Amino acid sequence: MTEDKRQSVGSGENVTNQIRAEAPVGAYEKMYEDESAYDLPYTQSHYYPMFRKTLSEVERTGGRSIIEVGCGSGSFAEMLLDHTDKTYRGFDFSEAGIARL
Image 1: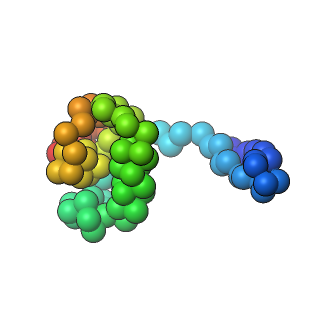
Image 2: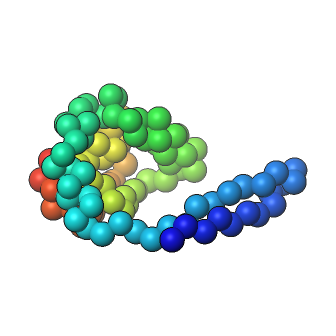
């Protein structure tokens, strides 16, 4: 079930946060087994803009270590380790995602 939560920020803008139930592990297993998009280099991933923004925030805040919950096939880890000397740990409950590492 999805619920919208609106909150006021700074200049009176509204920010919408989506809250939803997590998909069951089987949905992630199927996604990794069916989608060849997860075989692409991270620069071609549909997540690449998010990876770049996340890395930018880590650098901006001076973070030295990263823990990624839901690391999937490790694309963000690969990007992070290619471009930084940060300490990284990631975990995922999808065996199919981890098998792509």
